[in-house]
Image (cartoon, rainbow, N blue to C red; front, top):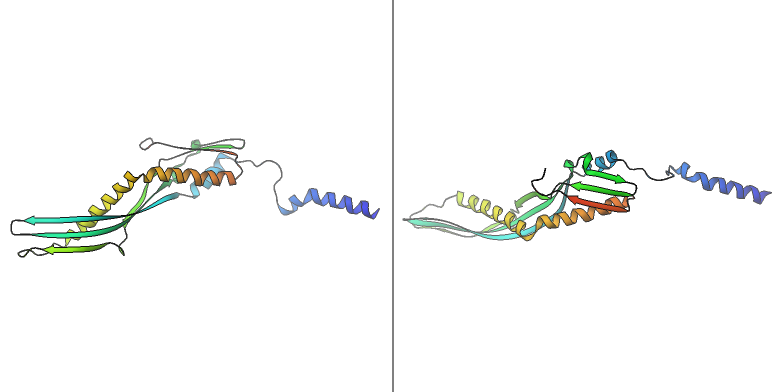
Length: 189
């Protein structure tokens, strides 16, 4: 009789432990609104960071002499996806499948690392004063060229692929078995 009582108590506890621990029984129910809120909470998903160096020469030649500047610029370009732009229509859930349409990846930040950017050489003509704005012009030119080099190297393609992988892992961890991530093409808002 004691054995039977312990066995029945064990069965009852086995069926009730999930409720005591707050574990939800039955299938998980995901709503578009809940998923949208979680996706938008991520805001800027920066997925790729390129570090590039560029040598820039700035010259100002006049008939009475020249100014020349040689700048080694160390730049950082980051790209990712703006998840705050995801709308309810961009998420479709059917059972354990989810389709998410994301905005096209874009460059989120580009800057020069001032600690590693430096003037390598500076020449001032005999009859000239050094133009203080040359260094600033060199930095602006370097930043434009570093940004362009990142685009040419495929930073947006890499950002798209990294975002796809990271979000797929996130949704699979949330219980979805089939995750499809699609990106809008640039200019298609």
